[in-house]
Length: 442
RNA sequence: GGAGAGAUGGCCGAGUGGUCGAAGGCGCUCCCCUGCUAAGGGAGUAUAGGCUCAAAAAGCUUAUCGAGGGUUCGAAUCCCUCUCUCUCCGCCA
Image 1: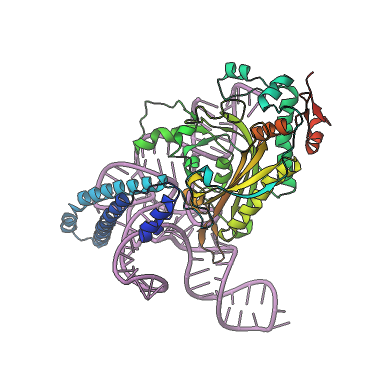
Image 2: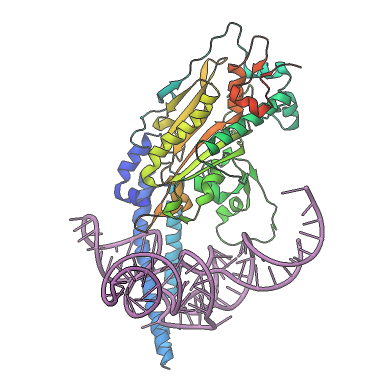
């Protein structure tokens, strides 16, 4: 969420910046609501002040044993007037809040302007794609050839975009997540965390998935006593009772500071977790339909840093490096892309994507996305720290995949394939696989 | 799932309708005193907003005692709903 003060003081500037991300900020609506808000809030507060003063007087008079009926008459109409003003103000505030919740983060100065993926900027490349002296197969052909990948059965059990891994491939999948977790906890200083996979709407609002991206989430309805209607905001009622499967470990990890003021000494907070991720992939029909690149359920080792605002951009570089380290150790060629304004996610101020080389596609494909959200999520979550002056101040939050397990698995299958259809196991993973150096058909 | 108890500021804890944003204590900050230490004395110490203001400073003001609603001129205090925590019983990996 953006700082409303910033919008009040310079809407045009904010709107211009947002336009670079392809977001049309409803400036006219906002300005009109703001003007109304100002009038109504002043009025409401005036009425409240009058009521408070009168009540105080009545209290005083009563304690002196005086007759208060005259005073009571004076404030007789105040109540209705106040109630009306409060209701109107509440409506305006809700409308303003709605706009704010829908508005994406502002891009950092160093983010290139651009409309789409095509305008992203390559920052660096690591490793040279290997050349093959035999026809390169894709991960599906390889996995099925090994008899270790069974998408048909997964489809029967659940539907499309689910996968079933068997034997050595399932082991490789597990080895990968263990390996990643070990590196991040032992070498990069992250605290391993076990988190809930079902979260409430409040947490999703905090990290920015709600209210705007509800379509992408799997919602788990809780059967509650429907008979008991609960008063209050009907619009949020359903949302608040549901739980949602996490679309990324970022949600529970970042929300650990939700609604908290952490001491300065506890910073930076660096957390990692291995979690499943669930995405409905609404609107991605026809994209990556083959194989396990784009699934409703996949696993990820997530990195989250919660830091002092002064250090968040250094932290972004470090965090990106932590994710890269995994690919380096796995000897997988990759490149790092700086996303342009038009391609960034909702909450991010700056994002690096890490893309791994897939020889069959002859393309680099995303395995990690590392973002600095600055105070955008912190403001939504009310996540603060006590600064050098002892005053509460919003934290900065960062997150990145370190890495997406399924896609890394795909990269290993394709990059480490041999002419006979077998797969060599990257050296660093062998200890995690009982010393196994090669996956071949039984 | 059943029964009961509870939720107040950074922490502990008082407060059952009226100058209560909230006693007292701890902690923290500043000052004084004591040669240092210890002890003591004094002052201060919530958050988020709004308005005035070019801005800062300052002033005025509103809201917040788990959340939301209600009663009332007035609610931390009374009523309703919900959430969470704790204890006991049941069930369970």
